[in-house]
Length: 142
Image 1 (cartoon, rainbow, N blue to C red):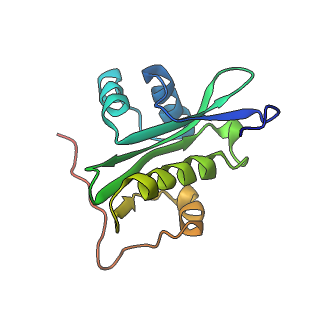
Image 2 (image 1 turned 60 degrees about the horizontal axis):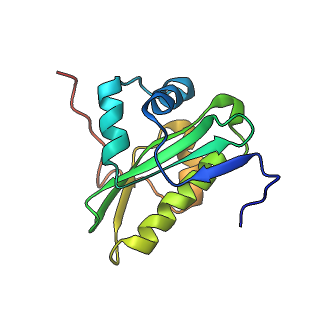
Image 3 (image 1 turned 60 degrees about the vertical axis):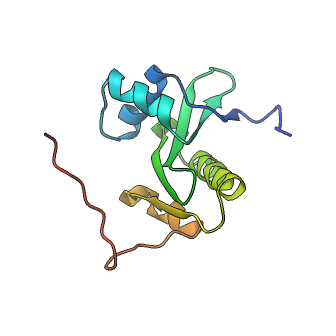
């Protein structure tokens, strides 16, 4: 049961599109359009965000993309700078991983792209770098 005195609440749904865009932008992730955000919010395998109880503001988020069978990719892990260092990213990450553990068939393949600030958190829950066997790649924008 959640502690009523806890200033943050984990919400097991996506934030609204405006909050998604603000969280990405203000936490240092690349900006996206409203159209892109709408697809992200609507089509994730699972999504969660953290809301500040007093203000109602969405202050952290993360989501999982996946086929529901064996492949799952964590994305959009973001916490607003004013709320960092309070374990919110860990709460989001652990909740997302618990959803995979509870809902996916055995032996899921779970990936993420780790920016430098998040690497210690990801390592602490068992992620390891896949290079040189696999290296993340991106396609240049059209």
